[in-house]
Length: 339
Ligand SMILES: [Zn+2]
Image 1 (cartoon, rainbow, N blue to C red):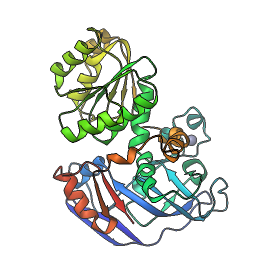
Image 2: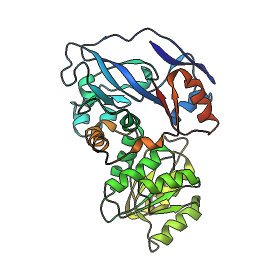
Image 3: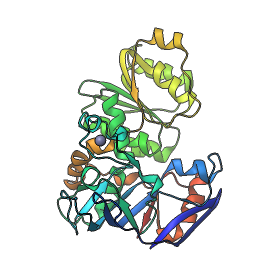
Image 4: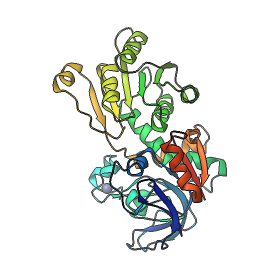
């Protein structure tokens, strides 16, 4: 099979790798229909995280080619979506809806799904079959469900988004934009998107944003207060992971409100006195995407939502290196890799 290997920072190659095979009786082998690159791939690409001959990719959709002896919920030939954590979906943590913390979890990035095939551990718990073979135009949206849509959705749920609520979204990358989409679907009355980029603002409005705020930091917080009678938003999604974004999220939340944070945290610290006086709920972390997959697949299948619009560059897998360059140079934020 063919797969992406990051040999060293900046050195992405697509090369021949051994075909995956069933190792555990709970495994399945997928022939991928699409894969994609993620903002998190830039950390090793830029050398911020140490890297040496690493397989890449943790998002995937595809067709089941082979199943282990103990796999029963998916069949050969099924089109399936899975999340970036493989999970058994039966342990106590999974049953509570926190599959990203499954006691048997396997991080798919260690398997590397920027490839033509992949072994999926814990296939029964991890994979969700679509109602049939999807039309090709649905594949980008199903791909989005594998991570960025599920993560934006979890952020909205963690922020207790619901009818009558005002929601603010910090971050206009793929996850933030899909947090807007999730907030709309979950019935938010007003959705304030922080964004400075015209194309991202337009997509945010298409996904359901009612207001766009270009200011950041305390000026951005001031705008949210202005739009909410001085109170702040009920629910705030943090989809960046920086100190500035976390501060902005907490300060934009009204007392008693909720922050759902899913931006991968980089050197963020929260002063105890500020947290004490804020009186807000904080919940987040790696999203248990598996919890939401059946519902997300249904909404995509019914064409109620079109989250695939967050991909702003599509390339064949063989040109993955160009996809990494485009993301590194900020010419693209989310790259769909076709097979
Ligand atoms: Zn589990």
